[in-house]
Length: 316
Image (cartoon, rainbow, N blue to C red):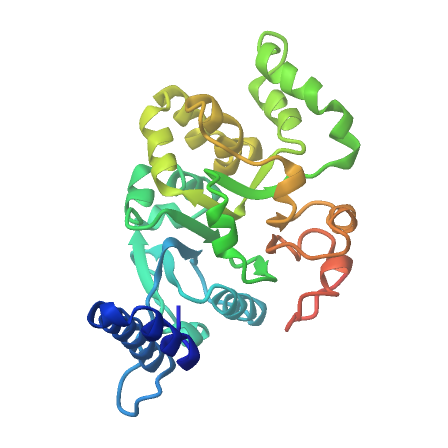
């Protein structure tokens, strides 16, 4: 809030009998905005710029190896598109940052056990432990941003304000849309006729969503993990199938563990992120891009190359 000179004069004239309190109010408003502007913009020589970080969300980059040129580009874009939010690298105890991370020396690091970064199963365990989420208890949300994700827009605060518990790119499958309710019914009542893996494979079509670029409410995630049956968690911690990945757990199981665990429908989630079959959602959104995308080199390269400035030109 800022007052113009004209507004200040009118205020003093209208409330001249209360000149002292009005003066103090105006002075405090001016002082706050002036000092904030000086320090944030660095207008006073010799004064280090102070940036007040937003505690609504922390951007988390899981890393475990040297970055290639495209991954450096991706992380620079993520920093650019999330101003005012803390960024943190999540990595193993033994990982050594090399020169590929030189652009990101100001980013903090949280370290976890080495075995959690050896393979997909280890990463699933990391994302299904309360220890991970409790490290970020000072924040309302975590934005998981893997190095194969890309942000197009500065919309992180917008999605935080939606107050969902979890959101990621929907597993969009246009040919399966008509069977959505059937798969939902089978998942609930078909356990005596189909394997758990078969039911998960069918149920995951057109639900939200992929964890590679995902917004996670910290308190809700801790609550789910504390209430989930150990047998259910063991299934995902020890399962070998891709349908036992941690993001399947958060998309399908978490709303059953806590009934108030809120995830948007795919029709809204496409505005957050895209992964599978991006062309049709792109037209559904009237040719606008989402907040971000995931696995842009693994799916629909011919589409994403129009919007992402690859450093290493991909082979089709």
